[in-house]
Structures are given as C-alpha cells and as structure tokens.
Length: 174
Image 1 (spheres, rainbow, N blue to C red):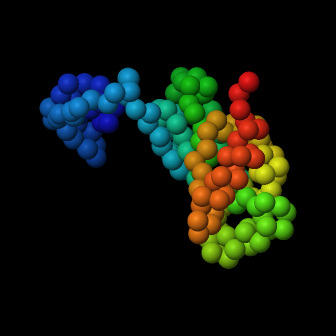
Image 2 (image 1 turned 45 degrees about the vertical axis):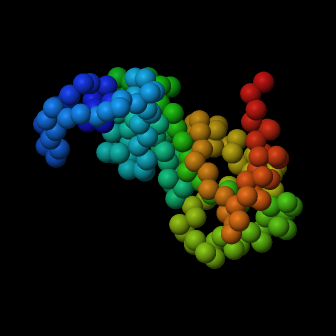
C-alpha cells in the first residue's frame, strides 16, 4: 500500500486485511521511486519471506545478532525462491555499542548494561575500539551492510565521540 501511495496518483487496493480507495498521498516523497522500505524482525518462515518480497532493507533485531549469518542465508533463500537477486537487499543489524577507553572501562560499562538490560541487550558490540572493530567486521562478513546503533550510557555523546574517532576510521572507503 505504501509503495503504491508513494508512486501512484490515487491508488486503490482491496486485500484481505486492508482496503484503500482512490487515496491521496501528497506531497509525494522526493526520493525516487520511493523511500527505502525497511522491514525488521527475525521470523525465518514468514517475515524474511516478506522482506524478500517487499523490503529494500531487512533489519535484524539486536536480540538475534548471534544468529545473523543463519538469518541472512535464510533471507537469501527466500530471495531466490521469489526470483529476487539477494544483492539488491540491504541487511542492517540493530545493536547496542558499549565502548570503553580501555579494557577495564569497557568491562565496567558492559556489566552495567547487562545489569540494566539483561537478555534484551542481545549480543551487542562491546569492548575497546579495537574489539568493537573486530566484532563489526564479523557482522559485515556475515552479510551485514549497515548498522542501527544505540550507544550505551547516561550521556551518549562520549561513547559516540569515541566510536567516531577510533572505530569509524577503520571502515572508511578508500
């Protein structure tokens, strides 16, 4: 429905769960043919198939970070089944980044995050800048092409600055 509203003058649609008739969506998005459609979640039978059919980006939830490689393989299977080139679909990973100035600082922050979030933290990215770089590279090798990052801390400016200064340069394109 969204893609049709973004690209057609007055679309109509009658489906099993939703129905629209001659609706207007103005102004149309500037991005052509439409803004990227992100579908997030981890269901391997239904959700990943829907992502293969409709999404521009599939987002793996942080709680499923350890399963990224398997889920990407399953997503690619769905893409091939529906006749889509898997390389036309971006894969994003939602993750919390816990970065410390040194090993001791990183460990203290990780323990605080685990106490606050428990299992909802997922695997996350945690450690020194060098350790964060290594963990991010593992996710890229598993098929991740972009990240949705949340920084841990009461004031997230400090970890964001540390990440920008010491981690991001390792991923600059030459």
